[in-house]
Image (tube, rainbow, N blue to C red; front, side, top):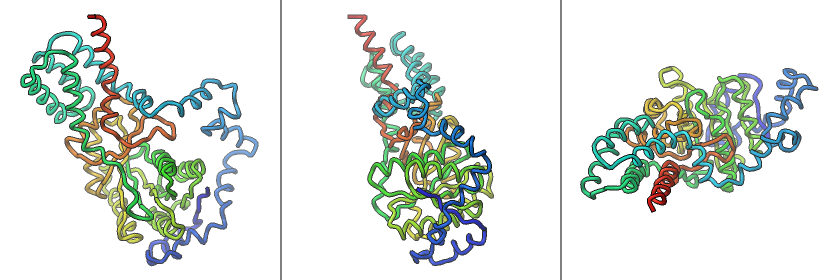
Length: 397
C-alpha cells in the first residue's frame, strides 16, 4: 500500500517518549496525509520520460506482460510457480549436492566399505562445510553402524549417512508460531548483504498467504536505498510500510508497533540496519532497538530472527554467537543456498550453536523462501545419489 514518512528529525523524539500503551500515540497515523512526499524525492532523480523505461524492466511481472519479445525471462517467470517446493529445493541445492552428494556417489560406487573410504568420506563432508564437529560425529556414527550392523553395500552406507545427518539437523525444525500475540513483533537482523531486506519482503508474502495482515517497519535508516527497497516490497505485497527519511531506527519501529496495534495488524516485520559482529558500537545500537521494542510492547519482540548468507560457510557460527549475545536470537533464516556449495553449514550450526531454523531460501522468487523441513533437505541432498545407486543395481541386473 503506502509508506509513511516523517520529514524532520523533530518527530523522532516524541515517537519514543510517549506511553507505549496509548494506541493513539503513533504520530505516523497523523502523517498519513502527505503520502505524495516520496514521489518528489524519486522523480527528480530520473527524468520523467525515462522513468517508465527504467522501472518497467526491473519489475518482476512487467517483462512477461510488456515485453513479450524477451522470451527467456517470460518463460522462466511463468514456469517457476508451477514447480513444487521439493523440485525448487532440489534445484536450489544443486551446488551443495554436487559437492556433497556427487562426491559420495563416486566414493560409494567405487569399492567396498573400509577405513580408507571413511577417511575420504570425512574429507568430502568437510569440503561441504559440515564443520569439524558435525563431520566427526557423522563419521563416528557411520563407523559404529558399519561394525555393529555389518554394513556391506553402498546403499546401506548411504542410508546410514542420510539418517545420521537427519538426526543432527532435525532439532532445528521448529516452525514459527505467530498466534500467541497481536501484533506479533518479529525483529530481523543480519550483516550487510545477507539478504535481510529481501527476506522481509518474502516473509510478508508468506504470512499473507497464511491469512495474516502484515506491517513493515523500515528500521534500516543507514544503508542507502534500504527504505526504498522495503517500500517496493510493500507495494508489491500491498502492505503498509512505516518509514522515515533518515532518523532513529528505534523511533521508526516504535511508531510501527503502535500503528499496528491501533489498526489491528497481525504481524510487524521490523527491519534493522546491517552490521558486522566486530562493530561493537553498532551491535550496541541494535541492542537499543530491542530495548525500545520492549518499551512499545512489554512482551516483545516475540521473535528475533538472524538472517544468514549460506555462502559464508563456517563464519555463520561466529555471527550466530555474536548476535545472540547482543539481542538474544530466537530463530534463523538461511538464504542463498542456491548459490553455494556450503549447504552443509546447517549441520555445523546444529552441532555448535543450535537455533531454530525457521526458513531457508533457494532462489530469488518471492516463494523461494519456505519453512525448513529437515527430511526434505536431506532427501534433496541425497536424491541423485539414490538414483545413481538404483542405476548401478539395474546395470548389475
